[in-house]
Image (cartoon, rainbow, N blue to C red; front, side, top):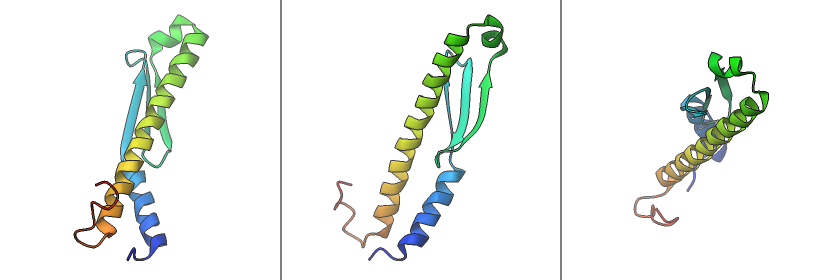
Length: 99
């Protein structure tokens, strides 16, 4: 019914790696780019924030931005898994899991 599960998992992992996500904090003074597979690809901190010299604020904003990115990752991964599962089910059974 579900085909080759390992193959489906590999396809999903590849698809998640292609989905680009980004999050920010402090009105964009910290930006983090990553993908839905959970890889952080880039971190950008505005020069204005760096020049402020407020280490604690930078740390706090970094935590906020990272948490926002990982929340997006979780939501995207769940949506993709749900979509994959629906594609794997025989016709008429897509409501089986609340879909």
